[in-house]
Structure formats: C-alpha cells, structure tokens
Length: 204
Length: 204
DNA sequence: TAGATTGTTAATCGATTAACAATC
DNA sequence: TAGATTGTTAATCGATTAACAATC
Image (tube, rainbow over all chains, first blue to last red; front, side, top):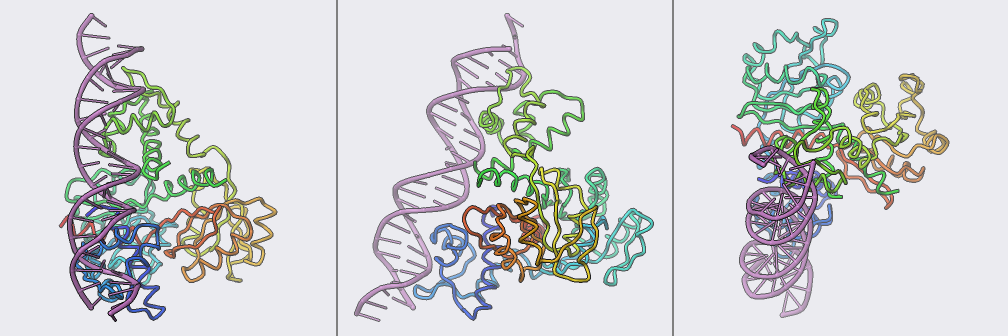
C-alpha cells in the first residue's frame, strides 16, 4: 500500500473521531475530501480499497470505517515496545500516552547513563544497555523507539537487529542501516524544522 | 516547490555532511541516488533546479551544493521562535540543540501552569500565556513551536495568529485552522507510530 | 419521487525513469 | 585519449481528478 494512502487513512481516523464526538454517524466522501484538499473521488477510491460499502444518500458509516482503518493499520494488535535512550526526549515519550494510539505497550526502557539506570517510570525500571539483548528476548519485544544521540544510533540498531527487533521508530537524524526483515519509521524532527524554514520564506 | 523535492534536499544535506566528514569534496548524482533508491536522473534534475553546475567526471562540488541547499531552505536566515507548552515534550525540545539546525533561535517560552511559570531555561524564563501577545510583538518573533495538549491547540493558534506569527511547528495531533499567510508544519508523532504499526504487519 | 452520493472507468496531471549526445 | 558523468529531452509510471450511470 502506498505511503500516501497510509497517511490519508490516519488523517481520516482522527477526523472521524471528531465527527463521532459531534454525534454524527455517517460521513460522505466530500466531507472527508474537504479535510485536506483532495477530490471526493480519491476518497471513494480509498474507501473501495478498505472494502467498505457506502450508501448513495448518507455516505459511509463512521463506526464501520473506523474499524476498517484500525484493522488496516493493525492498531488493535497489542505490540510490545522498548524505548532506548532516556534523555529529555525519551523521557517525554515514556511519560506520554502516545503508545496506545499506535497499539503499542511500552515494556522496557534502556539507557547507558549509570545515574539514570534504576529510575522508575510508571512501573518500568530504566535498565542498563547490557541487559538489552536478554530483556528483548524474554519480554518478546518486537519494536523499539530510538531516542539516543545520532552518533550512537547505528550501534544500537545493530544490537536491536541481533536481538530480533522487527520495527524501529527512529528519532535520531541519522539514516539507519538495517537488515531486511526490519522496518524503520523515521520521525525526522530536524527535517520538519527545516521544512518550516523553507515554508516561512515562501509565505512572506 | 513540491514537498517531495524539499524532503530530498534535506536528505542530501545530511548525507553531504557525512561525505564531507570522510574528506570527500565532490559527490555524483549516482551516489546521491543510491541514498534513497531514486534514479540518478532525478537527482540531476534536482541539481538543475538548485542552479548548480556539475562536472562530467567528478560530479558536484559538496561545499557549493551545501551552500545552495541551505540557501534554498533559507537555513542561514536567523528566525526568532517561541515555544508554547512547557510540558515534557516542550521541555525536551527547549533543552535540545535542534533549533539551530533549522536556522531558528528560541527566544521565548510560554505555559499556562503557574507552578512552571518563572522557571529559567538556558536563560529564558517561562512566561504566562497572558504575556504571549506582547512578547511576540516586542521580540519580533515570527514562528512558534506548539507543544500544548490537543484540546488547547486551536485556541492557542488563534492567539498566535492575532499576534502576527507567520509559521507554526505543530506537535499536537489536531489539524489546525489558520488564516492565509500563516504556514503550518505538522510533526505528527501519532501518525508516525501508526505507520510503524502498519509496517510491522507488512514485514512479518 | 427527486436528488444526493456512491462505485467505476477514462482522462489528466505530475513526478520519475530511460536514453543519449555533449563534455571534461 | 577514453570513459565517466553531466544536462536534457522523451517515455513511462503512478496517483489524482473528472465524469457519469447506478442506486438508495
């Protein structure tokens, strides 16, 4: 499935939650299209791809649509995650409620700093990097969130690959090298900021 | 300029820094293409767009290319930024060194929580939201980083718009409504996590 | 019923790749 | 020089839009 479609499904999902909160039970392709300036026919093609059947007068059933999108993105499956790097950003993510929005459960936290190791975070103890391999195995952890400094990222990725991790949510600006069978989703904060810089020049 | 090109320019930039660190002085379109699986002819078209002239044997001069990309993204212009929302994420960003990578200088921090107001962060005092309008004006701040809870986001955006902000780096999952003349760059953490969920299903 | 909205096919658009003469 | 690599044009590909008969 193309990346562009995935991103649209995610946007539909958050908009549908808003509509539902307003008491609506159906949404038309035109309503969804207005959301981010695409044509209603593109939305209908996305709907066909999801396998949902709409009704000529009212549109698509919101509950059905939410369920199908959540299923397409596999958000209902509980996936076990480890966080590597308990710096300011790692700490912010660990304490946030974001994990559940992706169907993830944070199960372990690792850091290198002996001053931090042992800290309790909502019932999860920050562990030493030396425990990484064993804990990922014993806790059946399949995904990792990487919030270590860029210089350390690749080295940690190699450890994660050996331990059998299947997916990485990467916050370091470094382009990671991973063996096949491992997927990386980059959350490029620096690129976001650079894009804002570019856009600022355009608007003014 | 299409978003896809912007993202490529940003990727070229970080790769060029690596090449330069290795002591190289030129890069060919083929090298840059290998980076993320596009064709060398696409890279050459990007180069033409930047206005750089390559040499048939050696490729493009790295220093020239870096300068042109930085110029295209306006990274050399110093832009003054405010951070709104000093929660865990806002705090992590405030303490990070990311701002300079986009050519931004963090000049003010705002939060609603009276327990936090007054805190000193690298010489910047956290201010009350009531000061937002005045400080943005008096400090000539043109951009804002939004790390407030989703429910408060739109309300803050309206204040920022009134104060004359030109660009917003948005970390809230909410789709923001802004008047024309203001640009928003969304840093969708939730969508990143959902995309990872989808990809995990695909690889296994 | 009337007409709003779907599902579907063809047309359009833009971005990417292929190809190749020019050239350092 | 030989050949690697550019700059450029045409071909291809994929994604988006337009159009419209079907239908609730």
